[in-house]
Length: 299
Ligand code: BDR
Ligand code: CA
Image (cartoon, rainbow, N blue to C red):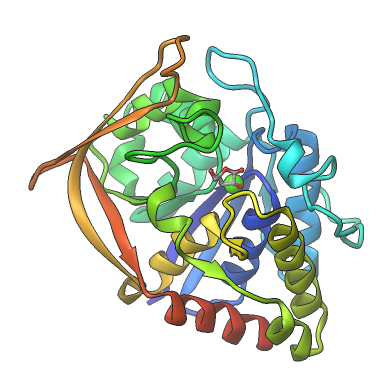
């Protein structure tokens, strides 16, 4: 039977690639996509999520999630993802509309109706934290969380903090301390899991291949991590969910710094057999890129 999953996301260049990978995967059943304010404002991430669902020719409901972190103000990453969140790509606008239900309620409703659901979290953890705070029984219906976020010894917003955790550290703390099984793609591994050129995607000759090729070129030109390659953060969390052979995990205890100091969003890792997070510590880059290419060529 297919695994049932909700995807919580702030598209976002790498979110877009992650969503396209997930939406072509036959072994998973995406019950809903929840937007969140992160890389850009939630109205734009919601719009992009709808347009990506249309690009994938899927009929997956999209729910608008939270626009603001739990207690802090939203600081976006539009300098990286562009003012529309998709770098240079202009997605075809769809008539598809958001569901009436809000994202936090949708997480609960879907989880309760389906039971045994997984949640892939590709943005700040605001929606899931709010849902956990609001619904005492929510955890019973969740299998595991697959999260892109955090870092042991590096940062991409400050030198200490990764964006998704920095954006809403209070939410991250709630989620990491929830006791739910967590699989985490943090910066150390996502910055090594990369696409080195766009040509194989462009060669596929379909719309999805073209969009991914443009997004890859955009990230390569931006070269934020000085690696001459496109860093696909969010797509690794999805790839690991689809096929856990793509990464190796190790158990850690992770604590989140929620202060307003320079350490905001810093995550402290301690190796621990019974830790609260399974960290993906290494990934098979060839397998990862092949998964992206296979998926894009099936569109
Ligand atoms: C994470 O932050 C966002 O900018 C990306 O979409 C990814 O989810 C990487 O730190
Ligand atoms: Ca993201």
